[in-house]
Image 1 (cartoon, rainbow, N blue to C red):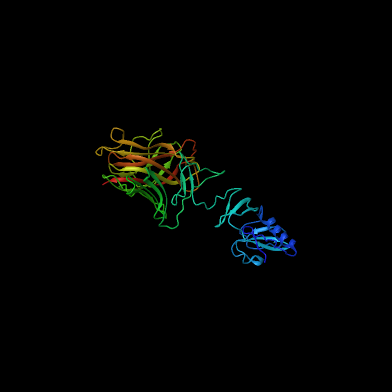
Image 2: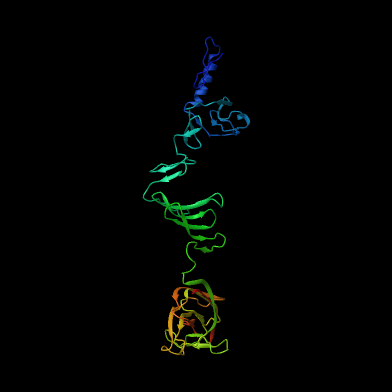
Length: 386
């Protein structure tokens, strides 16, 4: 009965054995295949269509065809057929396809040469140690993530809506601020003084984009709710570039108040305007409208607040006061087909009850063949006192 070596499973030549060369050649054949061993690929399951003598593969799970039943073996082409060799722990094979030397650890074939396999690492620590929670840990003065020729995105993904995908900022390993998707798909920012109790400061609704400030009172204690007031009038545009505002002293929708041709409108007040109460705070003014003719190259707009005293006529600068909310400015509207729009962010609090109105004229460079019009609609965003 033929006996075999314990490690490489090579057949011994028995005493008085006939045809000793057969056993000897079989041992040489196995040595030729497994010493300095190399395989065409790892975890192969389908035999090749063409057999090349001396070529080997490491077989994966459930191989097919001639390889069936040889899971984990090394399959080699020898003598025109297949020779299957079962590897032992410690054997090394060169993976031709990956260019990596692998060693059999008993639980798998680990790479020990060539390009390192950095996929599916259990953890990575840079200048520190990773753990089962912080699989990637970096201890450094800064961490740089940059582009590879274009843009760059940092992605934080969560499994379901009720999970958390966020950035947590800590002080002494205790959380102080967090922003992201915490328990919902709304974007939120929250802060903490002790690392345990957090206060939500801002929330952006995922469906609508509406912003709320949960920890900020809607208004100052002396203020009411924020509101939008409508401003809608018709403005004449004259060839002599006079400032005009809608007139309040006639029933004609086309009437206008001439406010002069200087750098600023005159102080005379006989305009249709929007009355607001003392203490009202204006934060935004939006004007939209339709310029009726290509004669108008652009508009110049100034927005003012006119107020008291209420027992005098408002016809000159000794009987009325005027504050500038938006200084006269060329808006950049130009002449376009359809509606045009400008928006001003302002910070103005009315010192008295009075009127908000817009003075408008054709900008320099406009060549008007007659009187033109700017049909103006607007919204004034403000918070009125209680």
